Image 1 (cartoon, rainbow, N blue to C red):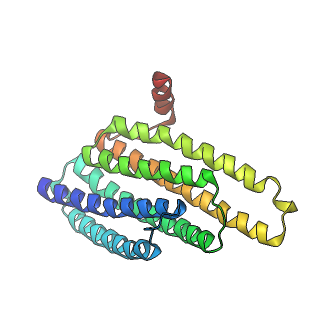
Image 2 (cartoon, one colour; image 1 turned 30 degrees about the vertical axis):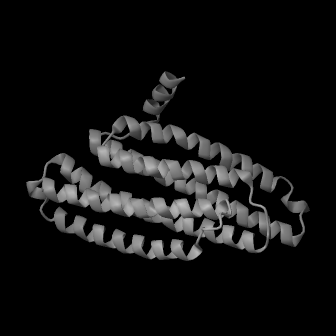
Image 3 (spheres, rainbow, N blue to C red; image 1 turned 180 degrees about the vertical axis):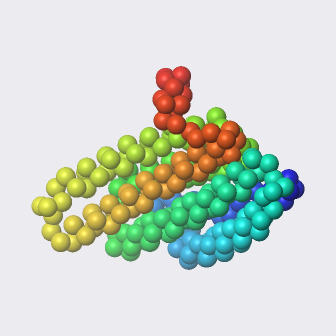
Length: 223
């Protein structure tokens, strides 16, 4: 069973790397880099969806042998089904953000700097959760949760800017702001998904739920 779980974790990492490249491409589109490709993101989404389905099937097959597994192995299998669903959701949101970036480029519309900053933070969080998952690091999992504060700050800041005088805008500008508000929300959800994965890794490693009080202590120690 140990060898099977190791191979399964390798499958999750491979799927996670596809999500990582999708986020990288999304960031390139937001920055309007010449090599950015919407077609590549859409191709990646199909591969990610297929990988998610295959891993889920493997988990279900392995759970049929749960009587021969210890508690951590069972936690790992159950958590992996949740983790891959979160990774798939991150890729879905990245696709939606990339489509808005593609539309903004075609219309020659400037993208708010906060969106670009949020996308960069989320991408780094996604990179780090793969390392956290691979190493079962409960301490690194806590760091991911702390970093989500940056995403929340940028989300709230941009929301206030876009909504501040929305009622005074003409129809075209109002629709434009609505698109950026959607992106803002998608990026926040991507950060939340990274946090959810980090909590799952903590649960795998310790058998305990990561509580808010533990995060407060961790933050105070860093301060």
